[in-house]
Image (cartoon, rainbow, N blue to C red; front, side, top):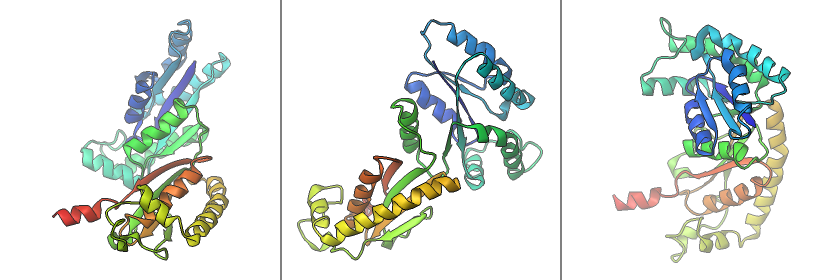
Length: 290
């Protein structure tokens, strides 16, 4: 039986993840008092295989009872039960923004500031985070991107990479993405925009893709960038980075950057956890329609 404990920072997405796990066949229980973990797990294991996937949502809403978590985990190990810990995290700024948008109070901020509550929770969860099997930082990923990661780990049984790589295309005339870690400018390549029959297509379409990749410069750039990224990624993982955003830019974010972002994505996804997003691909058409 696969036994997963979902925990982490309040506001980082635990409820959302439990819904994703439920969708792929997990029996999910949220906010179970940690003191009941052992009894609950025994009950599940005794069902003769009728329950083969279980996910428990456990967090600091349990108050003092949360201190029983390590006792429960120790008892699980002693009973011979394997378990995994999925820890969801997010930056302080992201958590504060989410709480203000939802107008909910942090469990540990009653009578104090939101920042203080988040700080207390981080301190309480430090040991749990250190023991986690998987850590996912949800600060900069969309809900659908989070779902892809959950399905990869718990449905497709893919290898988990603690570093989630996001490859995105963008248009310089709309601005560089604020969350970009690495920015690469591909405006040195011939622009399909100036070819009438290609103008209305995007880098997702074969005619544009074939045109952009027909140049030696495109292939050399792609090979050199891939080599650079394959060198950097293990170093980022070693450093403890949870997310790497690689931004590929051209003038409008519709042709060249989309093509090269897709090519980088296809190369990296063979051995890493990668998601892709085209930030500005539709903006030109929207502006024209106004």
